[in-house]
Length: 296
Image (cartoon, rainbow, N blue to C red; front, side, top):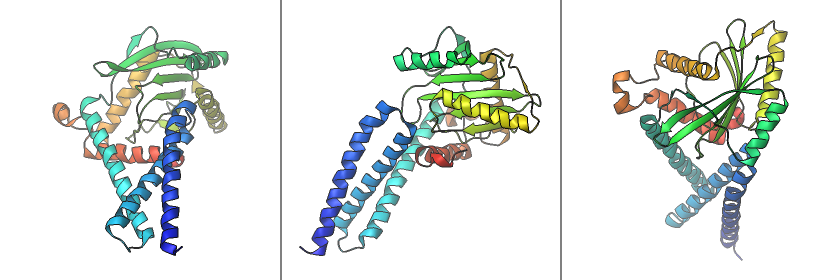
């Protein structure tokens, strides 16, 4: 058995193994609902398609260094993947209200058993529902949000249920306001953003902490550290829908100042974000999908 045949056989075996891992992880990741597993699945998928592309290139250009062909396969895969990100972000920029406002509603909590259990766990910590709201994305698709306040009203937890897709889903954020006007935000989300945030925000993004209880624990730790630096926190008195819409308005205002938005008279044609704004969101999508461990 010559070396070429041996290397070809190993390559085929690797392709089969990566294909099976890609298919299996596609079934397991949604069931386990683990952000880390979703990232691992994306890397396995990337490895499979990169090796498949390298094998196809080897068929067209025999005798070339296979390591070089693998590098080309990786580049081709990520070129196609990131181009798809750009197309999706550009399309969403035209049809989705990036800074959509919320309106109050009676109840927006998910009726699934696991989500009801999660709500009971939040309430077991002393948090009480302070309001529900929704924001329309498309004609028949809405983001649904429920807010809970801690017993001392120093922490507001907002949990959102978004239309399920590859760049959205469930998100949660814990917010506190200091006496100096600084907002401490600790959140989990799988939706890329990457735009400008107000200078008085101290945001900690944790794309691996899907459980709101873990978000609350980390947020409490951050507040304790801030108190150690002399920071004081004040109760959040605003109604949840007013509080959330005020934050959305701040984001829109600061991104306008940062030059990331299209002039209002061209929004219907070009969408909300200009090219730089879309580029920043595109970069954040790459980080969130493949390098979330670098997000702070």
